[in-house]
Image (cartoon, rainbow, N blue to C red; front, top):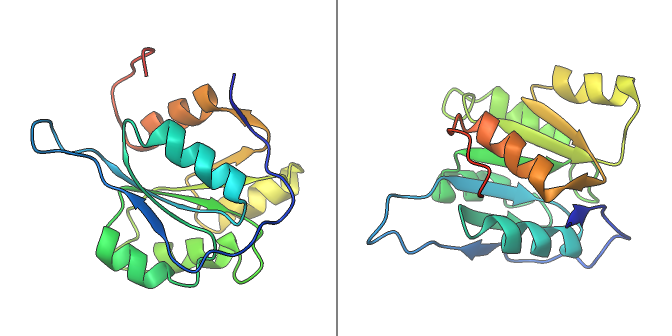
Length: 154
């Protein structure tokens, strides 16, 4: 079972990585923007979710506005604590925007206390998952947030 745990802070990547899906012969994939400062988490997300979704990842959040405008995600997955900007501020920017406010935001964090979770949800997040979690749990949460029909074979 693949489990997302997070690890020590990794080097900051300057360019976002994008895994475009070949949609010429199939229905378009939903787009997920992932911002997390842990390269191991980013790589696992990209590997495990890139099969079903069009995934764009970044480790800083510094280029957040540009990525939002260019990539136009259907879902945003944010780490709460990052060196340059925190997920709370990015989530508030999304929810305060007339253009982006309806895009679901999922927080992922090692912060597990009820007050941490409540604070994240009060910042506008649609869901909050505490690390570690399984890829099966993550996929189920994503399906719910994207309002996709259930499918255990994913």
